[in-house]
Length: 536
Image (cartoon, rainbow, N blue to C red; front, side):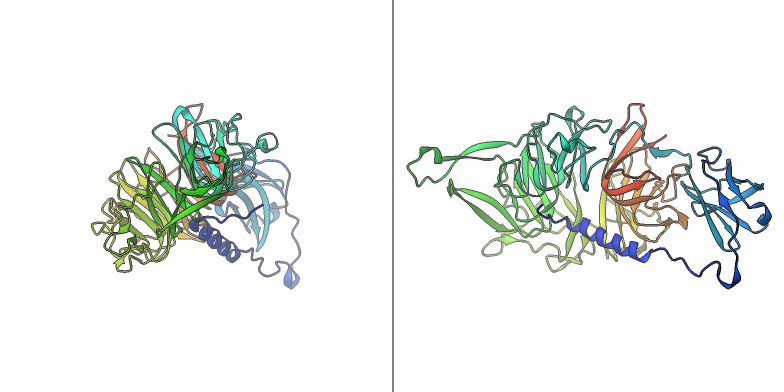
């Protein structure tokens, strides 16, 4: 299989996650039995506690032998949060679930010796949606999820199977699923993409623009990492005249992708607005097929230098009025940022916000991790970010209801204001001081989305927030405090790349997460997709 490059953002998150994982290897410490210590006869019995799941403040009985003789020397923990012990017999321990406890394993500590017990699910307003039938999910990372007309839900990424359907249906980078998470058969993806799909946009005519890292769709090449497909997944093509140097009249025209344009390397994100297509990524050139001088056996490619940002017309042709320095001779692209773009957002007024790891735009405009471009691609000095972020910005999320942005990353301040990995900024770039981060340890937040009810879901590699154990996923109020009753779930292992808010068949609010993760809340083999229920 041909190896494909991931986007800059995903690659850096993978590296950082690996570093963090390496730095958090299990430290066993000194031998607890050294110095003449005898192993204790404490054993958790098989079986679930009673009740098998519990709310904060409720009493739970655990089956464990041998603790009675040590009753004055015991500490008891649920997911590393100490819980009060209310009763001990020779075969049971009864404890009250403490505030801020989340789903996780229990343990008893006696004179420095640790005895691991069962997992205890904590009941709250957040949980895994059991009506979502994704099964084992995908066998590779998912980079995007989108809901289009007629309630069509598409997932894009770098995968060849979804819930075991790859054996009977060809799957490669794209799939359609129902609102219940089931695989939809009968689509016309053909061989799919030879690579990965990072971004998907529905067009006014109901067709779909996909982009990412691929040079072929189904059996058709001549694709520049983006193309258009129908609502049922068939590649949109057209017949175009070419140079015929033979006597064969059949070689005067060729069937080609309808969308003719893109970049020479992978595209991170794509936006469609006002009959224009804007793409961002780590590319250095715009490219298109030059059919007028091509022959049936030799398709020529036209190039134009474009540094990280390109705007095109709806047929893929370059919009040379955008992000191009018309004062230069010959005309050329602006220099752009002096680093990497990890995420972007296109405002309704045509202004484009870029985030990542960089310090300037066009070599002269200060832009520490964030910059906004005007609707012609020039630097927007009205965006009041000041000194910006003092580290990398991984993700930007726009909130329609508040007209504000949420940024996450490994920064600790933004324009001089302490932020500790997450900050909310106003549309003019100034810090919204009504939101205050309480701080992360053990890693960084890498993705955040604010729901329509105002709650903010944050994911990443962190272990705690506000010194409270929240491993990989947490839910905040709009002011940055932990949302009561919504932080009951256990550890998320992996990276979230995209999400989709919706409702399930029971009318409950849901949030579907996709990315590169294996387990959440004690459930393994999720296959990079899981849907949460968020009770109001």
